[in-house]
Image (cartoon, rainbow, N blue to C red; front, side, top):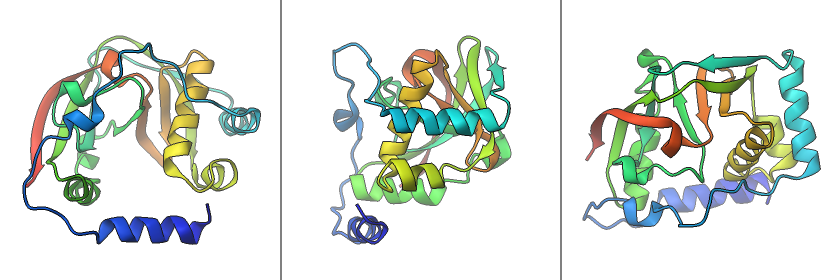
Length: 195
């Protein structure tokens, strides 16, 4: 898919007619009963992600139990958090409101509410430190300019390497990606930010 097609699809979804009733997004996000298996990961994707991590020395850091992280989006309750999709968060409370506009747009598009969650890590998590690496080039070269494919590939790569996620990614030292959020996180607080 070209960059222009992806942009056109995004813009058309952004300006699509919306209904006025707001509902929970939970039914659309319910996890399947099957065991968690990583998405397919091509050898090229795996090699590229290993190269990104290796540039910083292939450093592993631990997020300790009780560590607080924040997420803004359309997750309204613990039942909306699934292990089949990685969850992107920040570990800096001052940046907790950073995705409020995007969360509101997702909520409007999906006809549901937007929330800011404070999440608590349950156990020590083994995390790859990507040293601030941007995922833009990887997404362009190996994921058809598709953000969803990039997130699935990163999750599959982490699971393949027995990692619980990634920190310090996307040019942000506070960015955290948790591969199995339903298993690894508890909701500490939940604030509805829209509507």
